[in-house]
Length: 576
Image (cartoon, rainbow, N blue to C red; front, side, top):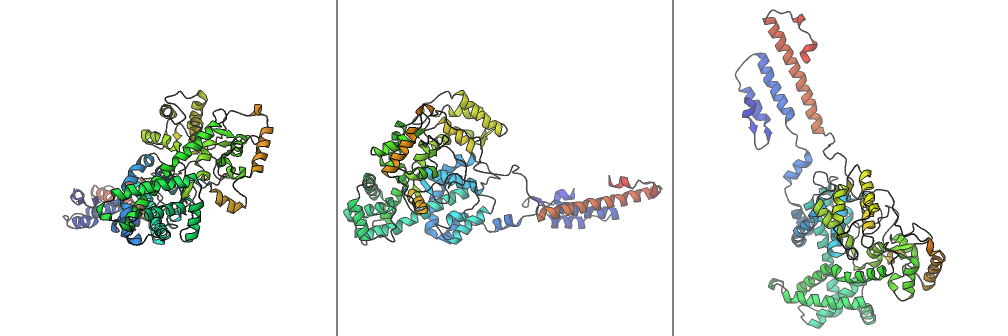
């Protein structure tokens, strides 16, 4: 009864000090009653939850993650990151809900996977340290590997502490994404100042032609990856004068139109001058990925025209023949195609170019900075999204997935449709491999989606077999030109034609090897023993022993009062 009177609603349990006072104030009684009261104190103490140091510090250090960012990065960065966090959190939520978690947190592999998808979806960005480099998303690492390259060591340490081996929540992942987006945009001001100088824009200059020229120079440096710190007036003027690249010229015209739009719609508080120009360039950077994707669609159309029997593949001799006939976009070195994962050599004598793998590879990334490249948008991403929204879980029965996928259409697949029986059987095999459910974020399901949408979803190579990098980087590392010469193209064409076309397979390879993008413990509720739990266990054992002794004393006393010999009381029964 007394224990029920000392419940502390604020602490959510019994308050030890109040319990001791209550017991001490109780009416005097026999020694056994006093002993039982003390046992009650010990038992209650044993049941009081110990507050772990990490949780305690988290409560004491009540500053939000955004507030801490302000301390290490400044109020300007915090304000921009905060404005981006909520939209990012909303965009991430359906994917986050479908990913394996532990206590509402994603391990670093899951954070990487989510960030890669959201940046690719929003901007077409392939971000260094986040995009899969061929080793898989589950490879070891942490936030510091990504943040340290773009921000201060303090900011990197802040996210590393938040991660702490436990993972990040949805909100924390959104703040990390917003911070990276903000830091990427911080580069805008430095590059734009350089462009201002090259275009002769000074102070509050509002001359439309000079501001337009500054935008031209900015985009030239961005598209051709010219380091603004090393650029010279002569270099940019020469590049601008001699640039016959249609994409560069069209992009500059488009950027000027966005600049005019932002200037016309700028809020009065922005005023004119440099701040308004920064806002215009930031808008260009946010829109450029989706805008430039029209070229990716044109490349896909050219590849589909060369496709081999609806397999989502182009025979290498056809790929190179198109290059010899003037399509310079299909001139990549065979070794380079293999390294970036764009080559199917399941039949070594008859290599084929995988349409979605080539399209989404770094070979087709345009523009960017040292932090990221702008690449083609993934149509497969748009196919995964409704699955994640409808299923809301990291795994699902194959029957439910088949029902949803049959209703999905793409630019090359009409819907609804009836999936062929062999493809349906494949998905059931994947489910059998995992005990009845299909994990949505693993290699086998990605391979199944490639079979279902061979022109949109890339074939998932096994980790460690590819290393996607931009052509110039591969060339610098290998010393081999990533673009094949005319003689090399012809040599490969002759080799491929020598193989009999009658022997070419129309089937698509299937490798039954699983790799999960996100690996979590099998028993999320299991916790490793802590010092607090060990102490609690020790106290409970002590309480049980004390209770046994007290019961023994009580039983012996009662026996004496009744005249029963103590020796007649079974000793073993005292502790039953």
